[in-house]
Amino acid sequence: MALLKRPNGTEDILPGASEEWQALEGLLRRTAQVSGFREIRIPTFEQTELFSRGVGETTDVVQKEMYTVTAKESSFTLRPEGTAGTIRAILQNGLLNEALPQRVYYILSCFRHERPQAGRLREFHQFGVEMAGSPDPSADAEVISLAHQIITELGVKDVALHINSIGCPECRRKYHEALRAYFLPHKAELCETCQERLDKNPMRLLDCKSPIDKEIGKDAPVILDYLCEECSSHFEKLKTYLDLLGIAYSVDPKIVRGLDYYTKTVFEFVTTSIGAQGTVCGGGRYDGLIEQLGGPATPALGFGMGLERMLLTLHSQGTDLSQPAPCDLYIVPMGGAAAERAMQLAATLRREGSAAQTDVMGRSLRAQMKYADKIGARFTMVIGDNELAAGEAVLKNMKSGEKISLRLDDSFAQAFSDIEIADRLALGNE
Ligand code: ATP
Ligand code: MG
Image 1 (cartoon, helix red, strand yellow):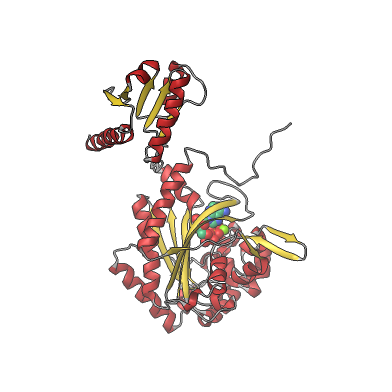
Image 2 (tube, protein in one colour):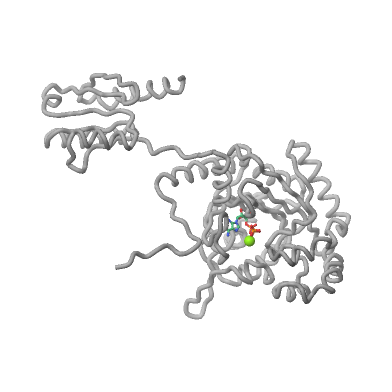
């Protein structure tokens, strides 16, 4: 029977690569936690209406990219991003009644029906944070600084921070008029989607991926010229705070972001190392979203970081976070009685926290040694009838070749652990 393949635009994360994901996720969790963000886990699918209302009817995500399933009379959509579901969960569970600001983070998979290419998948993973309750630009600076810290700790090079302000609905009314006036003479040349958007949401035209639309939009008016006093002062303060924190940025008045909910601050961390899909992290403030989803008017902001793009960037720069799966001791039994003893000893070691394996394939001594070598066992120990009779076996350090005799009694696990730790320290000092 023919082997079935995984769907286009999805990836298998295999042993070997999964260790790298774990290392990345560990760093993300630690960094989020020291900044006071706590993990939230939300469902993989939500009512479709959450995204059309939350992300925006005229966005690419909602118009072209959603995976929607109907079950009986209901319509559900696989989350294309994390913010809408997170805000829904915050509201449904009354988290805004707790001390504010509410800070949460998540690591989750997102689903978008896009054309798969390097850095653009149909199922991809995001680390994201959301902070609700503060209208102050210091909150914007804190959230940007968290993303910046992660990128710095990962050692990613060639990542630039671009910031912009897209104002509030007030500033945008005037700006929309200016955009319509600018694009109207070119309406017939625009892509079909943008022709429709011109009336409803002209700012979307600036985020269109079509090269023709991009070219037409080159000299479009920029939002920064239309900011009201409050939005303008918010943006100025943010810049002061970023300077204060020593975070370099450039103002890019063209950034509008692909999701409708943003207000005031928007930002992107962009790398030049992985070609066209270079935005590794994008976010901003969304002061209107919580109210739009039925909650009390509450300012909030956050970002989403694409983990596949982050790993691609690291790999392109020669960084590999993965650590090989550990095997501290491989016990090589010779014969049935020894195999039983080896099984017990390995189980004891694992209970004590050492990574221990023994033969489950009935292999010869030679084949077992080859296997131990392949999995990178740090120590091996052969036990046969002689060792059982003597109650003692020889531990071999696979790297240095050093041999040490160990009693096979109650002292075994502790004695092994002492040797193993001493070896680790010695390696660290090399
Ligand atoms: P793009 O302009 O590249 O399509 P976006 O504006 O759609 O990005 P967001 O919705 O802001 O992206 O998502 C946040 C982050 O998630 C992006 O910066 C990117 O790193 C990642 N991301 C978005 N879509 C994909 C995808 N299809 N495959 C892999 N990563 C993605
Ligand atoms: Mg997109």
